[in-house]
Image 1: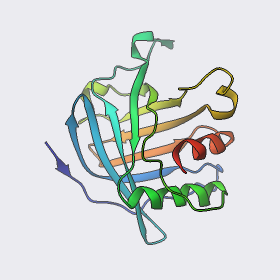
Image 2: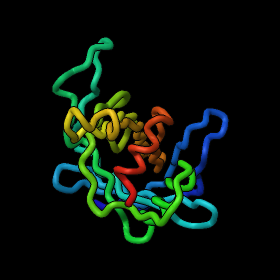
Image 3: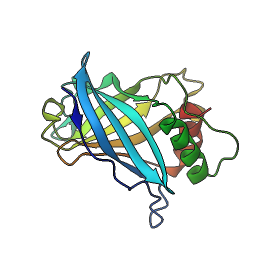
Image 4: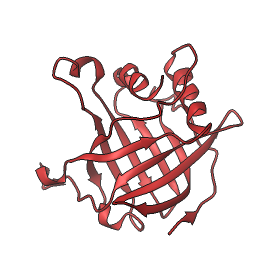
Length: 181
């Protein structure tokens, strides 16, 4: 079932902590082929930007009593998927906020992200807030230092919000290289 939500104007740079945290309104979402697909958008300088995020259905919380649950590490837990025009505009925002120059577009196909739910129960995604750490780790050991990164994904379907937050500003170059062309 597809649900409609209104977009909000909330893409911003959190100057006080020097992180580029991006918050979007969830325009619609649906369950398809074992993934929750969420189309999300926001306004940035009066331009609409956005992306589709796919979150694996039924992900369990990744920690119990502060111990990692190995079965709760999902190798293809999250996908970032471009939406026509909106995601290329988002790539421009990423470039601008990260301080990179040149023509930018969102890659048409991205590798899946490994995911661990840090807060919430993925089986209740329609009624609970989820905080998910996503890892870009599909590479050789030699490439890890240059290409590895982590982001936090916040999913709040009851409030119609989705956010991508930096874990560390040192990951900006690999994020940009993985997502933008």
